[in-house]
Length: 201
Image 1: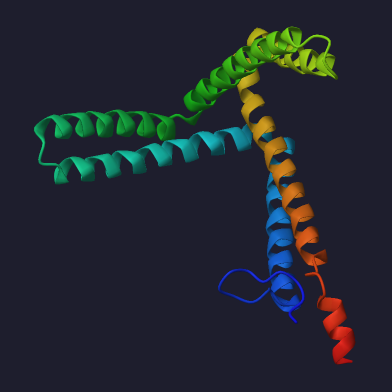
Image 2: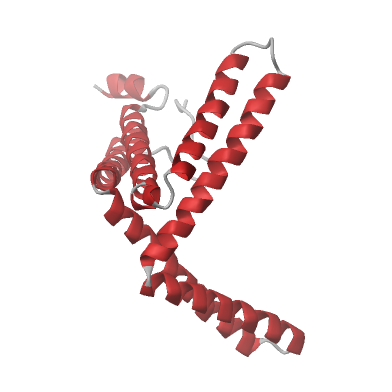
């Protein structure tokens, strides 16, 4: 009789395999969290780095679109892809040449996101007024609106730290989550494995 659940077409992972997965998750999580702390401590550097990465990604996208345009047999498709390639290339080069411009643009996007999502969340909370914990939804939405307005009031000065700080906080939360997942993988033991080990002993 086989104990535990066996994946289709394979055997359950061994303790060694689970240990390798756990270590990989935890090491990656720690590294990501460290990068996040760096972003929080040095938000300007982190923000400029994000802007540069976005510029590089757009240039790569321009190359991809240009390649598709060269391989297209439809002249209308060629024009569309070529236009996209030019837009991607110009925007990407502009961000790489002047990352502060990209940082300011990203801050505007963050402000818009906080304001729109905050208003939407507040309205949703008011619509479900009377349901359990509806007030927390309203509070969360109102907080997003307040943060958005504060960033907007301090713009463009807030562009120096807003994107980098939020990016750092996101990396820290992601890193912590990965470490916790790694600990969970480590502690997983398929049902009956200990029984098998005891029987073998």
